[in-house]
Every structure is written in structure tokens, then in C-alpha cells.
Length: 192
Image (tube, rainbow, N blue to C red; front, top):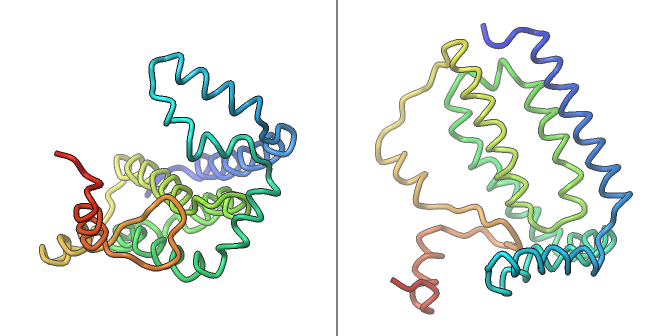
């Protein structure tokens, strides 16, 4: 059942090649002010507010060493939080029989994203990307062969959906989505 072995082998090879190409590209073209300014000007020229140039786009002016320094300064807190959030994000897959059949593919896919965790602080973003890729792969393969899914109580499903979140960046303590939302509402972060 599942995808043919040749497809799995080709997928594993493609993941490895893409990861290697990404690493070479990142080393050959490090960040810089010129690149950041070009991206910012392009977005502002398209009518977006200049505020879009903050955050991730602003990081384009920095190099790999800056990223590694930022990661190392938060590493202890990140290691307390993001592995747990990664496991939470994997719960839906663990309720199926699919991960057992595709462990090598899942391991290589994760290994392909692993270098990002050393050079950039947005660990939640990398988890989101990995979980998205795993989801697309699962959906593709479930169209080819049935995937058994365990039933869960409705209350457990609702609790899973509302009691945690996966911020893209900079969280050094575990948070609950409901608490975060109430905090944001209290400080007026949302406008309706």
C-alpha cells in the first residue's frame, strides 16, 4: 500500500538535494542591506505599508552569524518549548497508521529542515513548514491507499484546537492559545 518504492526513493533524494542546495545558496548569498532594501522597496512599491519591512524582511540584512548568535542566546528557552510544541503539532499524524509506514521519509524531511534551527530564531515557522509538507504528503498518499484514523472524543478535539498555539518565533515558555488571546484582547491588540 502507499506510494511505489521508486516514488519514495525519488522523494527522499529530492529532499536531500533541496536541503543541500538551500545550504549552498544560503552560504553563497548571505544577507545584506542591499538585498533587504530591494525587497522592502519592491513591496512598498506594490502599495504595501512600509511596516511590512520590519521583522523577517529586516533580518535579510543580517548574516548567518547573526542568526546563530540570536539562536544561541535563546537556545535554553527554545529547547524547553519548541520540542513540546512540535510533538503537539504531530498529534494528528500519530492518530493514524501512516507515520509507521513512512518513517524514513518523515526523518529525511525533518533532517532537511534541521539546518534552519541553527541559523534562525523562527523555530515555529520551520515546524509549520514541516507539518504542512507532511500534511500534503499524507493527503497525497491517502488518495492512493486508505489511512486508518483513530476516533477521538469531541471534547479532546476541541481542547486540542483551542488550548495551545505555535508562534513562529521567540517563545521561551509554553503558552496556551486562550491565555494568549485573552492577553491580546486585554491590551487592545485586536480591533473589531
